[in-house]
Length: 352
Image (cartoon, rainbow, N blue to C red; front, top):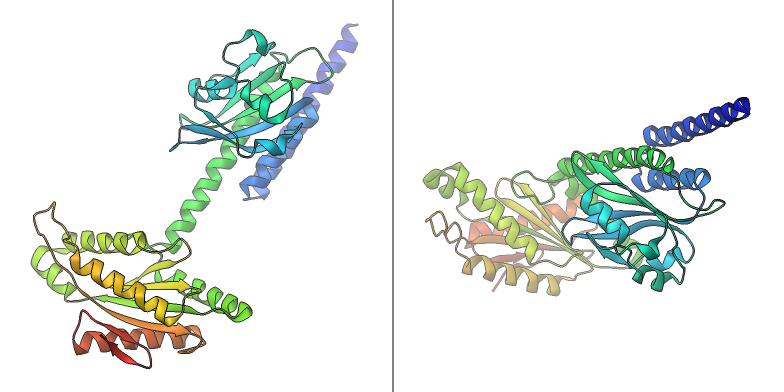
């Protein structure tokens, strides 16, 4: 009897080591966090059989949990369900950071029955562990209704805790990769995209517009007499001013538009699926906003600012990246050299 029990424990240990090996292998061979989390949940389902198993992520801004991965009975209906932090078993675990095993949810006042109402299933038991990294709760792993035995066991918690640690590593790695990517394509001063990313985006937009017969427009912006700001008020004030101009530009564009800091005091805007006349309306609005805004008022400087604008459109003005950039740049310099605080259009000249 003792030998049989020892053999079972050895087999269980080998199975757990194999599980961790598979998850660890996925972790080091794949940077796609969604794939890694999927592997974790699939391996978990092989080891602990449950009606439903879910990975819920924390939305820190909304203070809510949402279902990143859900597998089991009517799991697809959970994609739009959100739980407040502290609501239900999963919400409680996200709030306290402590694992929970509830053998009978009907006797636990923390259970949120509204999730069952969405899926049409009946939850009987729950085991739930937090996904934690650097003292922050990133999410929760939750299993419902153990299959093949009466209830979940306390022995299940260490296994789930270890898998939650792997999930935390995957999520942290994904955030680091995202941050590194952001640093390579964004400008430090303004948080707009940088000139390197402009070339990539512009090539992609040319390809897409050729394929579907779209127009798009490029706007060059050069701040007038910006050097005087640096010379008079210092480079810190100049950097803050550039950041504020970047915010003004970005906040007045559509979600599909792109804004770039091209270098120095120059900015570029890419307006997909936008012809020349529509783009001119956008430029005129930005020009008016710039003229009517008082910058660095909190610092007591109360600066007014103008800019020179150049506009070029695909495909009528140019059909390659270099042609479009050159024409928009030339139009901007025409505006700057002629009268400043004005708009010039490629192959047309200054517009009133």
